Length: 363
Ligand code: AHG
Ligand code: MN
Ligand code: MN
Image (cartoon, rainbow, N blue to C red; front, top):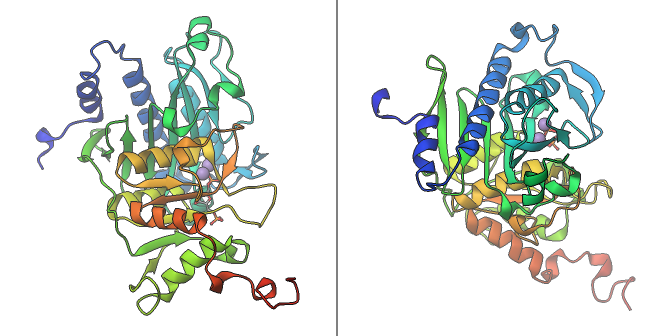
């Protein structure tokens, strides 16, 4: 399509806003600031070692974040970029990020607004060193009327809203092209960064996740820690054509959730990072507020589904800012199947033989 016929992100947002004649424009301004942050991060990622980020940009940043993970310099830089690009404009009441233990307060010299921005500034950062795609992922929530009216400092409880309450969610993918994929609650649209214009252009309107798939993504090195319904699902995929599913499956694992989400939005598939027994203090690997919820919102807006395995992700009531959770998302029929396996009593074959009838451990 010729350039002259494509919408820019700005044009898209203004046209969307016409659906809400009373809207102030704050929301659009916020999304454009987030988009600018993503462009800046895209540039840092693309320059790699040439970027001059204190020499070695993939090196460890030194500090340990609240997750107990060592921050890379690019994690820290990306977090700063998100903050600096969005804090000044009077659209935000506060922010929360993977890289900050507590909620971020809008500095006193700036006006405060009605939205909360929650983000993982650099997702998949173990891939920086090896030149594999990484991304940023974010969620926009409404602050309470009381926060909006008083302009008080935000506290953790202000962010503990279910995924269904998200106003918008999106991610930027820093791959061979930089893309911004966004939902403002009216479907999902994908924009590709035109590096010469510096604009995100609408290239993937109204993205839909195919309901059927033959592709799954899971970190199989954790298989000994999986719960029985997950084991059953993966075993059936691996059994292929002669097995219960009657078809062969393909497997992928990028270790950048944003990149996996993008593949699934483009051509279907299912992603699992389920709750497992590896570390009882971590009920899942991924974080509810800035990974599972935004990706879940995008999937559902594109006709896919997201779940803990037991509960629809959008209805989970968060209990803390950095809460981890089991996450399954992607093509609707597969996610529903996995939910069914969690709800059903275990089939005989998956009951541990030691505990089966007539074993030593049963009376
Ligand atoms: P982050 O870099 O923000 O900490 O997130 C990495 C996440 C996610 O993107 C990916 O799906 C998962 O961690 C990979 O986990 P494994 O290392 O267990 O494969
Ligand atoms: Mn992440
Ligand atoms: Mn991250």
